[in-house]
Length: 112
Image (tube, rainbow, N blue to C red; front, top):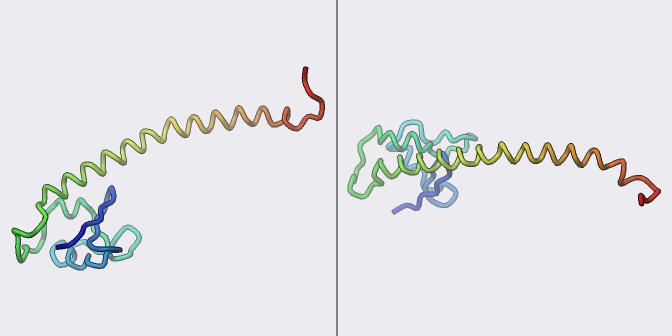
């Protein structure tokens, strides 16, 4: 039995991908990783199903589980992106407002 560590787009088996070689055995394209670390596998690859049949299919994670994780990760990424847009707008407006007030903060005479 392996523990799967899943992000919004990838998965790895074992702590720090120690057991991810198992994925490479059954899924072509696993092990390249986003940053080339060789320990991750894209959820879309796992969702497509194994390219090599499992030795013990009854002890394998169902393909639908990987697809559900991929859908959940996609939704999370979408919500993060949608939330980023008003956040950036608020940041820009706050910066513009603060820039207008800088001169007042540096003045030596108090206003009445």
